[in-house]
Amino acid sequence: MNLSALFKPAESLGGRFFLVGMLPTYAAAVFLAVLVWAGAPGPLHFTAAWRTASALGLGEVLLFALLITLVAFLLHPLQQPMLRLLEGYYWLPWLAAPGRWYHGHKRGKLAKASAPRTGSPAPDQQTVDRMGEAYQRLRLRYPAPERLRPTLLGNVLAAAESTAGAAYGFEAVVAWPRLFPLLSEPVRTIVDDRRNQIDLAARITFTGATTSLVAVVLLSRSGWWWLLGLAPAALAVLAYTAAVQAAVGYGEALRVAFDLHRFDLLDALRLPLPADPSAEQSANTELCRFWRQGVALDGIQYRHPS
Image 1 (cartoon, rainbow, N blue to C red):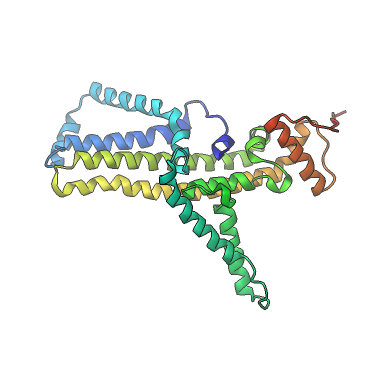
Image 2: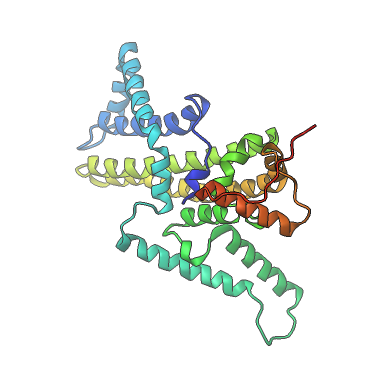
């Protein structure tokens, strides 16, 4: 299971498609077109690129825009596989192993820094604060050791999947599609906004890395101009950092959604509200087993409104 299953179905082609799909594709296409118009592969003369761009007729501009839009449209269904690739799925074992080892080492350091030392005197407030910060980073950025991914983005999303609703007995992967339609407008807006941030940053990361590779090949006979091909790679690194931060915020939004609306889900299912946290965890665990595996619910009585 993975966090991609937590995402609500893709919206119709509209503002989200323009933001996530078209903008990065247009930027990459224009960047590569300018290099070609400037003379790549070969010596670059950007005045020639400007003359070529200025000489384009309306029909040529429309055709260029149509082709880019078509490419963006064809790439749109691949948004989820792109995100999963950045999470660390589809990686060959030998390629994923160093990343898992590195993040396992980082996770171990955070776990050690957040754990109280047995046999030591009571820590002072500054030490307690540092331990709390380490635990917060551990909780937000890393799942259990057996679920570690080879990338930080994958680990942050796996941590969100593991913790959202877990305190109440829910498994986010199976409960989230049922909870999402019941969210209030403010919570839904926050969840959608942070999800779009992840997708946009992930698309820029993927597009920037691909564009950089193509640009370096184009500029291989352009002398030191080949360094210009590293600009999209730098943008990809920046976008990946933004994707990680957006994923942290998205995980927090998921946890808040369960905090505020888990009883709305029970009401919608016509199930009785639990009397205490222990009963809530037990009932929700059984409910998730039913959703995940089809295990029969025993002893459940519906509560219909008068």
